[in-house]
Picture: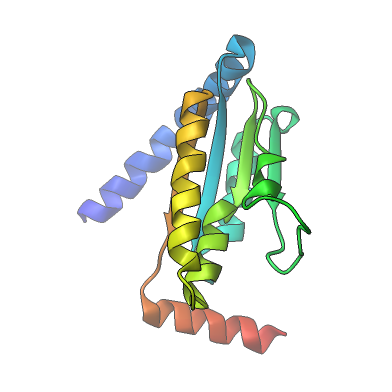
Length: 161
């Protein structure tokens, strides 16, 4: 019963929360003092794409940029995390990052042979420290679901192909 009350309360608060989010986006845009990078990560089939779509419905799309990178695309002779530097939001703007630099860390951790995951983690910490000094606010969202539900969703996705 408590869960149902919480859900009903959330639904009642939702319109005001959406209005408040838009107000904050306008305030960010007008102040031009900082920017916001929202990084959405999570396990496969946890609803990452759906969550990104939902977030996009809540924001004013004129002042938001969405970024997703193909990890298999070779950035050439570029510094680590270069592809993300190019996409960082300007002051007054919001950037939504599907996986962000954490996808690179996870990829490195899964195939780690020579300590690349540790090096990637160190680079991420340095990048985030630099972003904080530059006035970029970070919002990190990680979506997780129980393994049994993940297997069920993955089977359903595989069957629909």
